[in-house]
Image: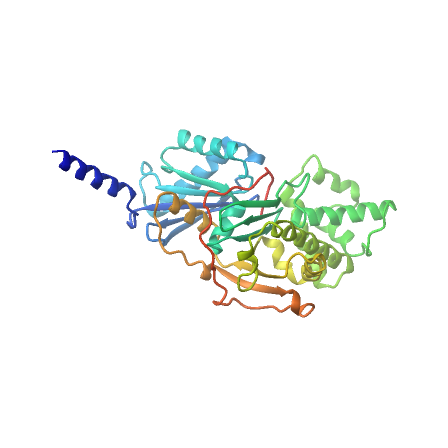
Length: 395
């Protein structure tokens, strides 16, 4: 009788820990930025089933309750697209959201979701948006540098330990992001006209572009946008006009993006000091996944970025990479790992290299295309890593 009981217990334990590959499993992942959010749902074999877009989900801006409500609404829309009954929750959802760097508020968000919206998902894995971006493209660790509305950098070492720089929000940080760049342009104009501090280059393009973008005739007309009717995304949107000015070779616009490249390089320098040698010495050097719309203007940021990297003598080699897919996939991967559903993840096809720097080749740094030779050679990093701080590392 004892032997039979032991056998039954062993069989039960084996059933509990055995990985699940069933196509009936539904795994969600949310990439949440400061402007919009994306939900992807996979089956138990890693096949993408649907994708849903929704509003931004930064709880520092809208509160825990509203964030939970928005996430639940996105999940329910995804379930509807798959024809899932409302009463059937997803098996697990990964949440990699702007502002989710603090464990206490992360727990509060998950508890709110489970308590108020039990039909949405059985369980959650939660972390920063930088974590989702990194786990989409790199299995073994590296750096994510977000430059969208705001900015944030995260290093994850192969042992799972993390180090961050920035991500403190537009009031005190977000250097190199779109809001920071647009605000800096406005500051140059205001100070130049006041004759307080002359702009480093003429404001002959920026000032008319500001009046047109904000639909005003003078600086007083811009004040409501900065105070009474403040909208961070609206101000950040002016950076597109600065990029247009760069295309027209306007000196001040080019200066602004050069400054953005310089300060973004400083983020990499800061976290790279704490990177393990196996990341630094890997083929292609330190891998940096670059996320956010500001990177679309890389050609204007390149000089400031490369000069800063070279002059500080901290980084000898690095590869800048774009994601070729949504970082919501990284959130899905984290959720899958939490419920022990280890399907094969196509990391290499999720990224492409757009720039490679090597100190020995400076100043003739070369632009490269994605190469299958640049693989991850270090062990899988810890999936429960978090970043310090409570800022808005927005896209």
